[in-house]
Image (cartoon, rainbow, N blue to C red; front, side, top):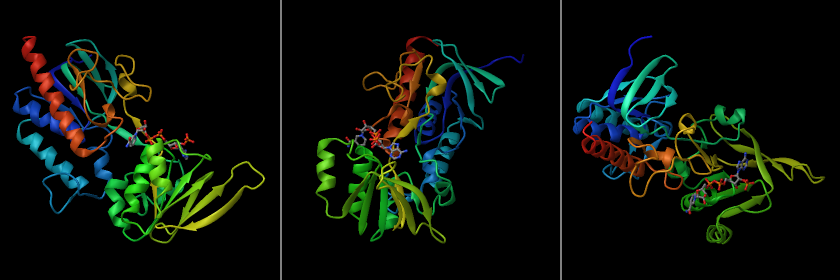
Length: 315
Ligand code: NDP
């Protein structure tokens, strides 16, 4: 077998958390190596315009922003590589990561920024209309539905928050909830119920989409399994999924403390996991904010933590 490559700081994942960690680690002379993963640039590259990241008064596309942060990381010497981490064995100062099932790297410090993936319903139509009326990010894409009609799927806090957000710009917002009640917190429920623009469709599921060059209607199934079960088509311009996210933490589950939903637990205000020298940043460790700006900030923390760890241990 080929010799194991040794690196002081290995970063896995390439969204705002990973690239920001790389900028800070490179500037601290940690000689970071970053593997970009399945989706170089992360979830933001699948969104349209980012308008809430400070410093871009006219907005910027997700892909462009990621390319800019990537270039910034390279400018300070980050070694950015294509490749997917397929195996992990975590041990303080000797974290062995296998890339693409072949190459092995031993990392003194490891920053995990593998992100989270929005859950989809699993309909073929979600793929067919991807970027043409289907979104899993209301704050990213809501603006494009000004004065239009949309349907949000889900009954949790995210769905309620998204429905409320969309109600500020859309003419009408339907909220399709598969049960006969919302799961969201009471305060969110009240806000949604009292919002005139939002109509809650209990016991409704979206089972298809239709339209030429974009979504024009959703096919709904009402009262599944009951004698009153019926299917009907509802005119809408967009479908927003808000049925939860999967943190991409499976590879590390054997070694790291995860919460009940699989998010990597970090200590206090730091990016430190339960394994010394291993840090988590961005959506993989963030069940509640999931914003580009919070991911970037946690990437910074992870790199600073790694720098301090190496210094403190003379590594
Ligand atoms: P949740 O897991 O809380 O809710 C997911 C919702 O999607 C549920 O209503 C669920 O239905 C529904 N759902 C799941 N799968 C499907 C499906 N295949 N078809 C139709 N509906 C489906 O996820 P959230 O993202 O809403 O929240 C995650 C965590 O983040 C929660 O702890 C939440 O409280 C927190 N959060 C807090 C916020 C705040 O306080 N402002 C904002 C956003 C999130 P069912 O109920 O039937 O299972």
